[in-house]
Amino acid sequence: MSGRRENAAIITKSMKFQLCPGWLSKNLIDLAGISGYNGIEVIYLLGMAFAFPTIQKGGLWLMDTEIKNAVSMADQDAQYDDKAKRLLGNKIILAHILVKTVDEFRGMNPKDVVSYIEGEPFISVVPVEPGLTNVEKEENGQRIVGMNTENAEINEGLIRFDIIFYVRMKDGISQVIVNLEAQKDNPTGYHILNRAVFYVSRLVSSQKERDFVKTNYNDIRRVFSIWVCMGMDESSMAYVHLAKDDLLGSYPWKGGLDLLNIVLIGISNELPEHDEKYELHRLLSTLLSMELTVDEKLGIIEKEYSIVVDDRIREDVSAMCNLSQGIKEKGGAEREEKIILNMHRKGYTLEQIAECVEKTIEEVEAVIRKREPVLA
Image 1 (cartoon, rainbow, N blue to C red):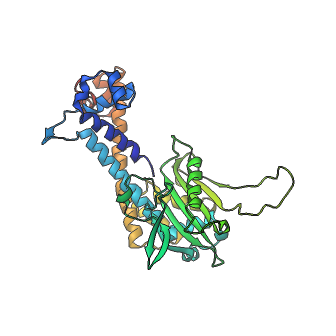
Image 2: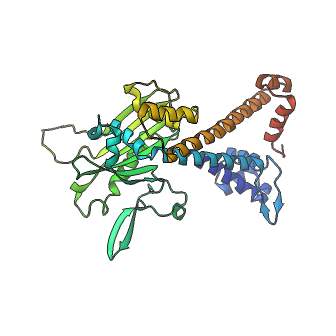
Image 3: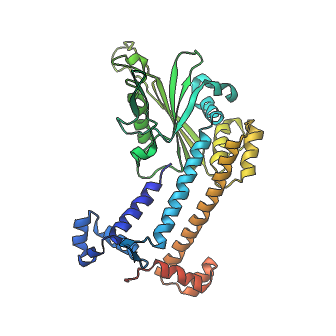
């Protein structure tokens, strides 16, 4: 899940200006040239950096309330993301997803599919970056290449696959590699399919020297990259894969057109009805919903999907519900502040604003004062 990096970038930039008060002696053009930001960004960051008085103690500049709140919000988002991945990473949940997305398991009971998932899923530990997905080490004098699951702090800040796991096929011999990614919404900064293509390509290329060696390309495992996107306009699911078009002649080229597989699952804001058509969507929507209570979630999971709720699932569902409540409350407060500030900029009186947002005049004044730069 994404979104935290943008908050961190804003916090970092704002702190950079706070830590360099000497920059105030420069004009905006000089500041833009020195910092690498454009003029508009400079104006914004100066406002952020000096919106509240900062305190200098022992040579350290302390963060103001605005930045502390942003850090707290980012931390809540990070915790929510972690719990969501842990919940989706339960084998019985993964089995329900496989039954609806991988042809070989279609129609099977998810409980029977659990046994085909090998080992424990890797959750937020395997880097996506080329050259870092695999780790090479020596064991008993032998060179072994495997998934890079070193402590995350070693490669701090790297993008990691949400969930990766191996699945043994019913023939007992072949394997597929499955990657599951959860998104709070459809990103606006890039096309989600483009990112999925990059991920599925990395899942293939990283197999060299781990799942196949030298030029034994026939040993490449099939890969599935499954993307769950919340907050969509409608429930949807699409399957993207390789296809062969004969442009001249019909030579039977050998190879696996089924090696690359992308599944895009769109989850709407409304909980889908209890129907076979929306079976997977209802389960995912229930698990990731920020509206349902703990009891409502566990009730649907147990009664409709016959999933045994163990302590781990109960703990993760409960934690997600608590975190989502805090995120919603902070989000609601931020939206209310934006309304107040917009009305203030447009010339509405304090009395009119207070009446519209159902606040006292003193509360409205406090919001406006908090957002106005001290140097204004």
